[in-house]
Image 1: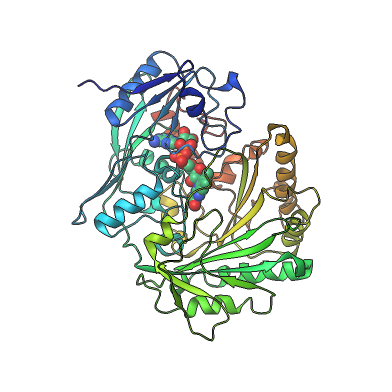
Image 2: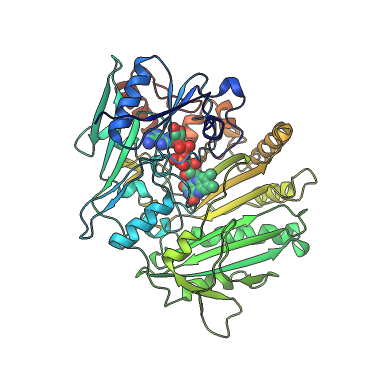
Length: 511
Ligand SMILES: Cc1cc2nc3c(=O)[nH]c(=O)nc-3n(C[C@H](O)[C@H](O)[C@H](O)COP(=O)(O)OP(=O)(O)OC[C@H]3O[C@@H](n4cnc5c(N)ncnc54)[C@H](O)[C@@H]3O)c2cc1C
């Protein structure tokens, strides 16, 4: 039977729903929207759809889970969105034969199939609705990344469709022996650059933990002075800096989420998940020692809860000693992982990111304090999330065979802002930009790189959290890809495998 994707054009009642992804800021307006969406369910359909679109001289953009932060997919005037969300098979041989993840699979589907069929997992993100296609090709990370590295570190092959100089679609299987530079580029440089990935292949994957221990520690704004705030951030950062090379701590994953102080329920929260390297939560000394660091602060504790998660406590078991001041619960790893849920989308959003190699300076923390306590900050939709990082993500060899050069960082920061009214776009975007710029302005940043996390304390920004504001800096590629040989390699790959620059966006690799 000939391959046939489903085409949804502007007249189709499904068009308005499907023309946008997770972030309602895009398409920016009707003129920026694509003219059609092609829904593909397998590689043959995708190859045929891509050939048809390219032969018609139309620009394709590619969508898997639709969670892109910037305009790369949905702003495509008169173009075609090739939607792979139904190309979502996850294969996991019960005897450990190679694993295959198609790009449309959501992380929730991936976790379930890999776990139920083979007891393994990928060290990927917390949001179950994120798509494998963009997430993995952009270097996705998550709660198991300190323990097991990045998902791209485990990939052994990729199926990809490229378009040659004559406009012909070529199906390739790339690995470390076949088109090795393209293979490397697809492991972290970000989707939408070189072609359409139709499968990620893995010879082996890490065993999924049996259980995890979870807790949430919160610090009320009411008693948080600037002095205490600076100390809190320094203690948090010191931990990751000091334990970067201590494998016993690599099963500890903490995200510190800071909302504004003008929200009546405003809190600074640490959401903690832990397992020992053997995949159990039987020895909690690492977790207890982590909590002890913050004993001097006015805090409250509760069981598992992550922002946006639906928490089930039915299968939780109290853990730790009855004398512990902290409430820790143990629950099955799969249950905890699937509770990560998703933020649902359907909202306007802006994000920014930074990698940090060292703990916070007082200047950085003061700037963060100033903006989180500013009367201008939106009381509900603004958050700064700081992930403890390091551990297995920092195996330096992986900087040379993947496209993720950030292998010395101990924290990863994400600014998030959400709102509904398009009238608020300009104000929200400016506030976020000012906030971010202020944190990286001062004597802690070199004079040539003011306003950006670049230089000896930092490792730039994360391509899966792209921020078009960074385009104002001539060195934006180095922010995302480092100052070494990676970006020149990506430019060569772009020239060779996408000679007509078919796959491009505002932040794609420039040949
Ligand atoms: C609610 C939420 C939670 C998140 N949580 C995490 C997290 O825990 N960890 C983390 O690392 N990141 C996280 N992210 C960021 C996420 O990893 C990126 O947004 C990712 O790029 C989304 O992939 P996608 O397939 O869903 O998005 P899409 O919008 O479909 O794609 C994103 C980019 O990849 C390209 N692309 C998609 N599919 C393909 C393909 N098959 N071949 C080539 N290019 C392709 C697109 O063209 C686009 O440029 C989160 C994002 C959101 C919105």
